[in-house]
Image (cartoon, rainbow, N blue to C red; front, top):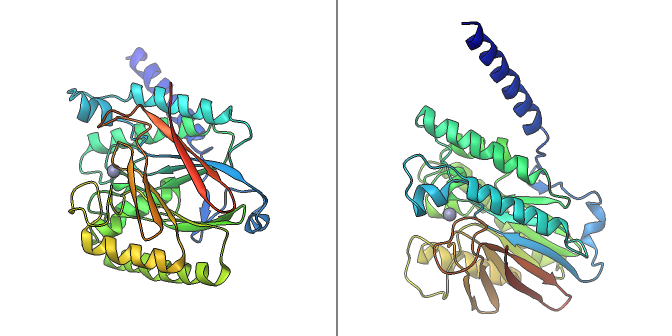
Length: 313
Ligand SMILES: [Zn+2]
């Protein structure tokens, strides 16, 4: 009995320590603006070429649950890959302006349908935040279908916002204007009509803003690619529905957006449509094709943006 009491005490202490560590994870958005830069104002000006890192699908838990089909899946491999990512990014010279993770931060869904799901999600979230706290450059989080749910609900979206910040927001960085979007609102808005409409209205205003301010580049981050290879491909799990895709890309192009960076496919892909490039980046976590686990180095120069995928090893 004494033993058990001790254990409980110890466990309570650990939980408290864990909570304290969790609190160090900073929410970097406010009122749909990214707040992770020290000099927010200065970011509106072009200061010369710079680099940022784009990654996707850290998705703690997918490898053992889906790829290896283990009965009691853990996420030690994703932990290793995420630690490698942080390590390699921290050592980069010159320092990238930020690291963006384009969704599916973790694997477990946010619905809390049972105790196991809730517990798994909390544990994955804890491990991811603990690792990302080690980054020495600003972190930008974009939500994926696993982060807000395949069919998002008001509750699941609010849960995401509380854990990682706004699900859609914008920011200036070195004279370039960036939008981060919640692509799940285009995939299934059945339970979140009003939240999805908020993003629609906000996006229209942001695109107008881009037209009037004419940034050096306008770039979009989202989880689900509008298309994987071409505008006319058929609707499937890994792209946006054809009608939505054409509608939003038309708006992006009209506003002068030339680059959309995405994830979700767990393979590298991408294509071009009317001067707009869709860049699909493979996963930090589990691979579904033949690419290595990796990330993309994005070099921003005045007249174009060039990017290269790098394996972690
Ligand atoms: Zn996904």
